[in-house]
Image (cartoon, rainbow, N blue to C red; front, side, top):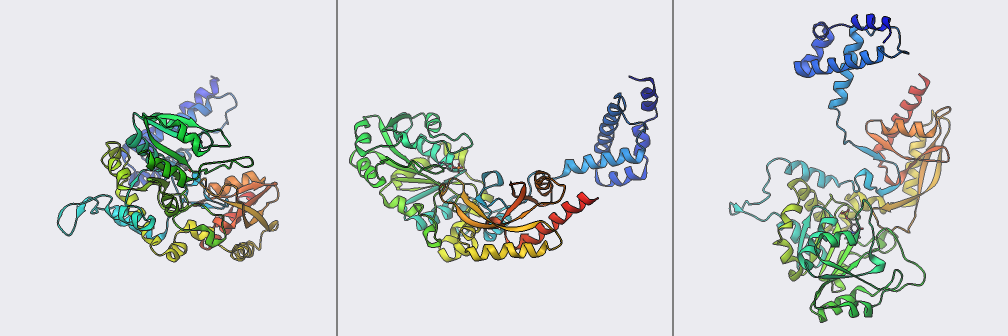
Length: 466
Ligand SMILES: *Cc1c(COP(=O)(O)O)cnc(C)c1O
């Protein structure tokens, strides 16, 4: 350590002195004495470290500067890490951005249930009630199932189903469906966790009904079909239709289950999207059980939904894992509210943001881009571009959605830096960088977010000018 830095370290104020300043008094109104003291000690420690470096600045920070540092640290510590994001990526179900944004009806139901709620209490009789009653009957009504359950997510639904229905026995799956969904969710691993044995049949591209038939033993419990969520096998291919598998299962006293992944409750072909099998259609194949996610195409909260026959659902409802995987009251409230919207499919399209975004006409997207462009009239290098958007969430993977975006390039500010500034805005704005420009896709942006985006862009420019 240099001699002169030792002298400078001595001239740093004591914590006690700092606590007596007016700036400290303001902090002490908001934080406890102990919290402020800790923050000041931390600030002083950092400053000492800086001053003892050979290349340290000459000036010793003033008490005021030290307090400002402590204040910034205290505020940053308090700031909520999980916060709102404006999704301008053009990916409707972006797993990193929390998948489905909820319908306002679901949001208010969550707020209401956040207090005390009749989660397991029958208000009519004043006795213990069923936790899943409302959600299960809505799921049955919407899918045509006899029985239904809801758990934490679809991975949990698959785990529960395979454990409860095939634990100790064998599950037959086509080699073309041994998929990894993402985030490390691999069907073979889940089967291993379930204590059932995986029996692979067929090949990557072709699996026939006779392959399943030949693999059935006295240990077989379940024939599992996994929906090709995030990939397609094209070309020289064959798969056994679900209805044939269901018939085979029935004939041999087994259960047939479909992991539908991003199951949709509404028929997407009505907005010109490709056909994704609906939950009702999947049950219509004769499957005993269908599982799907609440927060993919259905546009609800994170949940795993199971619909099927009493024979398949009853043992799962009574299974000990059910307790470990169950939903909390806030999620259940959002789920019930979302399902209730689907009772009238037009209401669902109008209110469930995921459906509304997928149902948008090209004209509406262009119009939104034009409105944003108009709000940005004072910026120079801004233009409208045709873009390619996606449903995401492992749905419609091969279907690009033609969309429209606004791209921005600010002079002397790399697009990656502009993107970073927008990410740090409140609310955060996430677009994508393409060809050296920041691209904001209008498919996933709401009209009410345009002002927010324009203000943030203007701010990024000013902080650059400054
Ligand atoms: C997404 C997906 C899952 C996992 O669902 P989560 O709700 O994310 O747990 C499982 N299976 C398939 C086929 C999927 O697409």
